Each structure stands twice: as C-alpha cells, then as structure tokens.
Image (cartoon, rainbow, N blue to C red):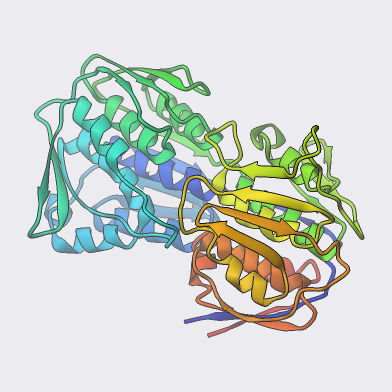
Length: 435
C-alpha cells in the first residue's frame, strides 16, 4: 500500500490544467455498452476508478483500444453473457461504485442484469432505491437473490412512462436515462439531476441517435429509439480538480493559474470560494488566483455565521465540501459546513484537529470551523485517507503544515486524481510517493 510523504510550507507557482472529469467519464464509458458500433471518447482521466471500469468492460467482452493519452475506442459489438452472470462479475461490481451505471445500459441491451451492492468511498449509506424504482417503472421486475447477495432485474420489454424521482440522484438519473433511450414509447423524468456531467451524457446519447429533450433542466423527456449508433465525445474538465487547486493556492498563499476550466460549467463553485474570502479572477476560460496572506470569511447579511451546504445542481456539489472545510481552517472568521448527503464524510476532521485546526464536529453532518487566519500553522501529522475527497483535503492540509506529514492508503486519492504528486511537484510542492 502506497503513502505520500509531504514536506509542507512550499508555495506553488505557475499554471496547471485540470484532468478530465471523473464523474462524467464513468457515465459516458458505461453508455458505450448501449450500441454495437464504435464510440471514441477523449480526455478520459488516467485514474484508478476509471481504469478499473475500462477493465471491467473488457472483461464483459467490449473491445477497448487506447488510441492516445486519454483517448479510447469502445466497441460493444458482443457481450460475454456468461461473464455477466458469473460471481466474478458481482465481485468486480462490489468493489467499484461507478459500475452501478451499467445497470441501465445492460437492461436496455440485454433485458436483464444481476448486480451486487457496489462499493466505493466509506462515506455512509448510498442507497440504490432511485435506480431500481426508476427501472421498475419502465417495466422491469426486481428480486433479491439471497444466495448471491445480489439484485436481479429482468424485463421482457422496457416501456416508457412518467416518473417523479424521490431524489435528484445523478447516478440514478443516468441509469434511468440510459435504460429509457431504448424503451418503447416516451419516458418523462421529473426531479431529474441536471449537473453538467449528466448534461454531457445526454448530449452523447443524442449524438448516438437518442431523442432526449429538456437537457440542463430537471424535467427530461425521452422518446425511445430502436438502436443507437457510434459517435465521438470529449469529456469536460473536472470541476473537483479545479476546486482542489483553488484550495491549494489559498492554503499555501500561492499565485496560481488553472487553465481551460470550462468556467461556465463550474456553477456556484467560484462564488463558494469567494465567500471564504479567496480572490480569483476569470481570465477567458482560465482561473487566476493571486497570492493572499489572509482571506476573510463572509457573514450573512444579518451578521449570522456563514453556512456552506451541499445541494443538487445548480447547488454546491458535495464533493467539494471537504476541500472548502480545510481551506476555512486558515481563513479569518468562522463557517458552518453542512454535509447533507453523506453521514460519514466529515469524520476525517479528527485528523485536522490533530493538526491544530479548530473545528467543532456538531454531528455526522455538520462541522463549525474557526479559522486561524494563517497566524497559527497546522502541525504535521501521520494520517490515513478514508475516501477520495477527504484524501485530497488532507493532502492540502499537509502542504500548508509546518513540517513533514505522511498520508497512508493513498490509493483512495489515486481513485480520483491523476498523477497528483508529479503535477503538484512541477508547481513547487514537495511530495514523495512511497510504496
């Protein structure tokens, strides 16, 4: 198991380009199963979760060819149904959260799927009700196989219908959309997720011959088609990558330019950092962050303490709350971080408290951060990364600490961040990987 050794206190300088979006990559790669023709996707990030999903598709019988760095050709002309019915497939799915979005494409393509409860980050319960209920409304029967500890879905023919989702689940919406494009008739999905990466999935499907309207809204209408064809697709830059670099610049007092960020797809993210007092400028499609010795958290208009909370798009993505929390530890002022979606994602703050951060963990969902205003440096610490986003937050904390820190179990960080230590070392960081 690998670890990072981080020598803190070094400023960053220069420019960095974000990787392709992990969450979009997982969706659009699963969508390639919907057609027996070639689909070429570029700007795919070279990260553990994505690479594991690509290997899973290979094992399923999909012909996968790497054309260039970040560019792959997928052709699901034939699928290995024997493998898809095997215990090995269930084991692979159980270790990879992103594989959940194969349910919709496999239902559309084969009319049946057996699927184990997926793994992923240890951030609390992540239920599949929205996925299964949506596909059931399209006409599938759901049973639970206690011997295999797996869910079994089957349908003679998927049929379009109206549905109101109980939550605006991104992966749930993606699964239902991918099943509905092959359903007979028209499907209407209300309270659908509408984040940019779901929009990208819908745009890809429309280029493949699907008929999806209402893209970018929470009301999607899908006219089923008999077949989809091949196409090409370019993945957006990763908004979490962008936010992580903003946080690193703020915590280390560095001047940094983040290139080609697809600014109009960042939504409320830039303003969320500005509310913590961080100055950033849009320069074309780049973000420029000047060096700041201090940054002050805003209060609400009535003078009450600022609250930053996650919400469905266009609200603040929950994946950046860990970064915003660690950035607040060196701000002037206080902020309440409210993580509504996952009940275990804030438990990593104990490690920040050990580094000298002033944080009150109110309950599994809320933490109050009292900033040091850069007057007290964080202490180095030996830590273990519990999940992708907490892992990058701990790395940011270690980069700003006064001394040498160690982060174990960094495969969690590798699941979401491409070649992160070399990219940061090129900017002036001091991070060493140890196996």
